[in-house]
Every structure is written in C-alpha cells, then in structure tokens.
Image (cartoon, rainbow, N blue to C red; front, top):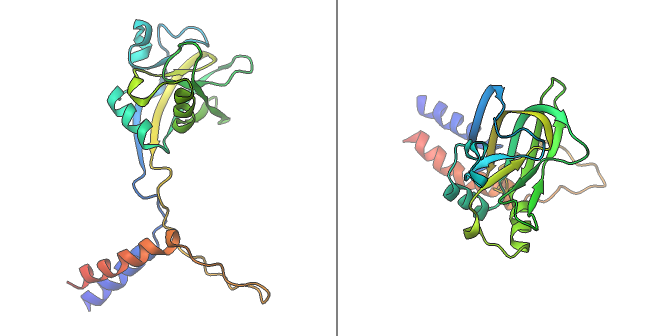
Length: 207
C-alpha cells in the first residue's frame, strides 16, 4: 500500500511540473535599507564590479569578472535592480561593460513599484550584441557597470537571473476543443521531458 501511494505521489509531482529548467537567480547585492555610494553622486555616475576609474562604487557587486564572462557567454541572462531615486530627464539606466567611446550599453526597462521604489531589468544579450558590434569580445570584458540616470540613487538589491532560455515543462491544460477546432499538437518542450522523467520517478518510488 505504501509503495502504491509513493508511486501516485511521484506521478502527481512529475506531471505538475511547471518550472524553468536550470534557472538560477544570483544575488549580487542586497541592502533592504538602500545604500548610497560616496562616489555615485550624479545620475550619470555608476556602480558595479571591476574597479572602473578606481571608484569604490565600481566594486560593490558580489561577483567576479570571470563569472560575468561566463554569464555573458551562456546567454539568456538578465540583470535586475531594485532602487530608490528621482527620475532625471528621459534617459533610462544603462548596463555596460565600459564607458569607452563609442559606448556599448543595454538600456534597462524601469517599473515604478508604487511604494517609492523602482525595479529595472536589462538583458545581457542586448549588452553583448552591442559590445561585439564595437569589435570587442567576451574576453575583453573587465567591468560590469550600471549607470542609474536617477538622482538621489540608493541601491536596494541587484540580481542576475540565468537560464531564461531553458526549456519550460508546462502541464497540458484540460480544455475540450470546440467542434470546429482540432486539438493543438503537443510539442517535445511541453511533454517530452515529463514523459522521460515519469518512468524514472515511478521506478524510484516502487523500489
């Protein structure tokens, strides 16, 4: 009886999967109170990692340049920051590897959270594309920098999410098609992984 129950539970768990495979969120900065940096005084200043221009604010992220290169090479990653500040003009925050001219950067998409904080996200793929368009390679990366373009900037958190392009395992919805419709064809991305994992889960539960 216990084995039967274990098998049923295993089947339910596998069939209810709806997660991004291999997705990971790397916290590179966290201060719930918000932190202002002594040498990030102007909206066009910056923070990050790599020590650009010898600034203290350019060494506040908990990540190494080698790790940044790996993330940039893998593709599909995003950089998200939560912060407070005052909007300055029409310029969005920028994510960049360098402030050399011409500057290769990816713009953040900013959301007002309605509580005095903002959330902004930029895609590493956009940054890498702009970087390589300027004749640079991943091996040339020496910094990872954020230009807030907000006055009175205080950083609350910064995270890098990887695996955004990984296959998603999504349960098939229980819907009956109309008479003039044919059922949508199931794709390997929707069913293949579940069908591959199910026998192993059942076998493990029955052992």
